[in-house]
Image (cartoon, rainbow, N blue to C red; front, top):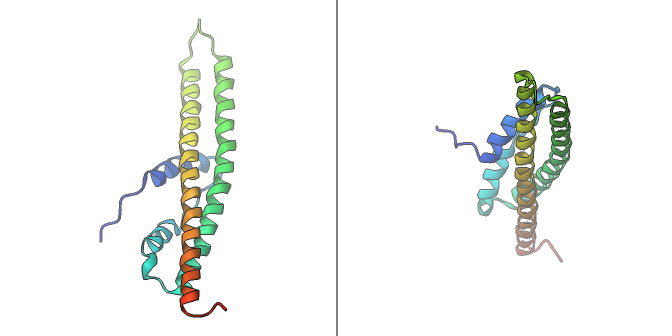
Length: 148
């Protein structure tokens, strides 16, 4: 069975995750794809599965929001390190080592910003998905006559 190609979000998150590992931090998206697949098959679900999916979507939206806050902090840290190395730079005596550090932190800041944009999109998606699940759940409950 062939595995579905990774989304752009997953590619960017994996790249940034490599930076975070240097600090002993690791992003965890276990269950992300399964939740997306469950959402795509929403019409096929029973009322209990719709309820579980609604909760999963809320939890994923919260997780995306929390990660975004952390990534903003890491982006600011990278920008500060870039500024630090820029301040050390002597234009009359260029240093390859300093230039390497400047480019490293500039690239990381750019990657963090890109991940932040993806996290915002993921957050919005999971909020809307949870609302759709709630609506589907309420319709199912009504159709079963469980609401008075």
